[in-house]
Length: 140
Image (cartoon, rainbow, N blue to C red; front, top):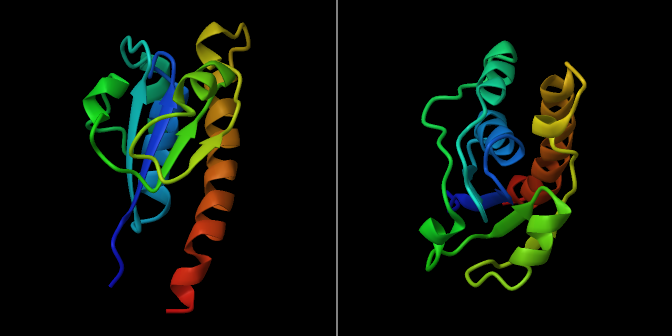
């Protein structure tokens, strides 16, 4: 058995994109331990929870957290979900690899389907990430 792969998703407010990513990765593959945090955390947007529940993804336990909560921990991957957090997290100690993704913030969008679209787009990226990062596990 291999050790779980630890992933920290980061964006500024930790209210939507990083919360979606955390829940989606947990839902997608049990080899991963997912967490999320923000550089300036606020609270989880209720539309984030609604989008996850509509997709039958478990949203229990999600809460907005500061990146400071994770200082001193090590992660296989720190994945930033917006350009602002990417700039702030490039030198994050404890990250074996920092990956930068950039998704529009559904919180500030006027599109009524923004949360659903963001959930879909992040889920597609996560499925590719899981496929690439677990390929070696099949060979063990």
